[in-house]
Image (tube, rainbow, N blue to C red; front, side):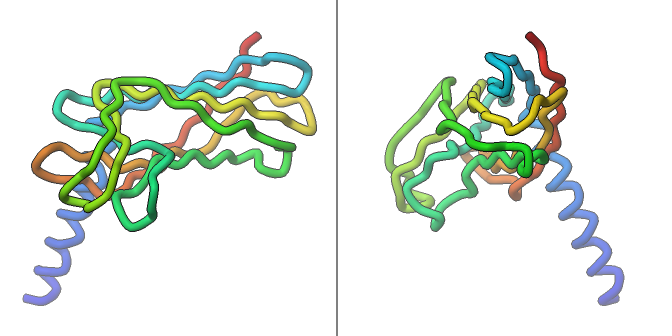
Length: 150
């Protein structure tokens, strides 16, 4: 009986993890700005009724913030602070007991990347948490890979 219950819990968790990336669809593109400077743009299309949290939250005690991690860390000599754009909602959230920034409908993250060497692609992962007014999905990581365009 314990084994059956454990298997059921694992299946439910797997279904939960699989759902988060179905309500938020990410695309990535990279434009070369100069010899070793690139502009990475990540676009999230967020299903109606859901939202994704900003990269910039006042505390780690609330929801999981959106985080972008690059695979080419050894080749990167620096990054400018990312910018965000989209349908932004900012204010106090009673559930988490803190001020939050979250996006519905769409979120655009732009990062300027300075590289030690010329790159032909930029890849990495985006970790994010999606919620609606009734529930939150567990944090999800989505891989991205974008070729460099001029």
